[in-house]
Length: 157
Image (tube, rainbow, N blue to C red; front, side, top):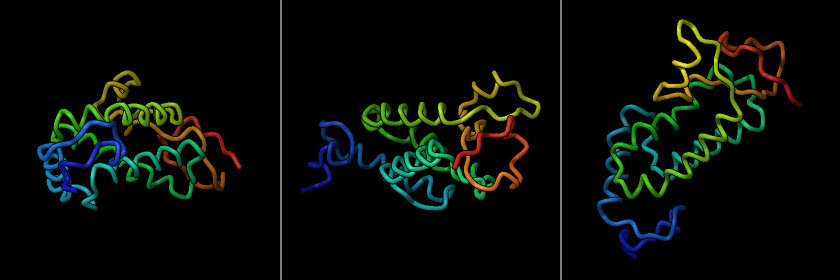
């Protein structure tokens, strides 16, 4: 079966068919963004990685990795940068999935303590997820957390 014949359902989307232009846009995004991001992951892989990160945050983010939290959001950054490169059809097919993940992330996180920026200004940023931290954490309560994680997240077992 050719790429053109694969259905979006097989790719985790709806039941419409993607065409060569759609696939080319995904490939173009992967190639263009590979120098800015560590791995040349596909759109599907980035969506899966964002979903896994959101689930980790919902379940309680391990404080041992607190200083890596911002780096872990690189998958969402990639999606943000890729969206204008992708065809409208690909974006439409994936938008509801991305919106659902983003909403779950908002619920599982709180706005960071701002340094020189109002809460309102932070929420209006294009990369709003960069201004949030996990509400629930696991790990050693004695571990130092970023100063922006204020008030301190709730520790769970």
